[in-house]
Length: 145
Ligand SMILES: [Zn+2]
Image (cartoon, rainbow, N blue to C red; front, top):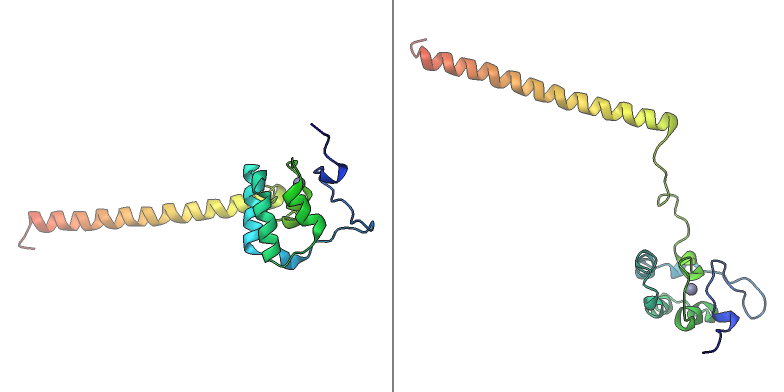
């Protein structure tokens, strides 16, 4: 078994173009299909679908040989495959941390307020039920009233 050529190795950082320039990824190639596939591949480590991703990229107008060849020819992709990294750039919403500090306090305060309001509504409901229940019982016991 021969060692894969260095071009075939998968890495976090994209390789250079044959002319030494940086591989650039156009936003127009990030179609819904491309992003969905990339998310699936990353989540399930389903790198056998990289060839499908190449087709999806081509449909999106991508004709970059370095990108397409990597998807189709790289024998083993690393979890941080640079093509996936290009398609799914760090989304601030994806990695939004749990609220901390003052934000956390504000969220907790608002949550408490909502819970208090719900209990208030339940309390009012229970009181109304009791009042109507008592009235109904009185009317039942003294129909002449
Ligand atoms: Zn890769």
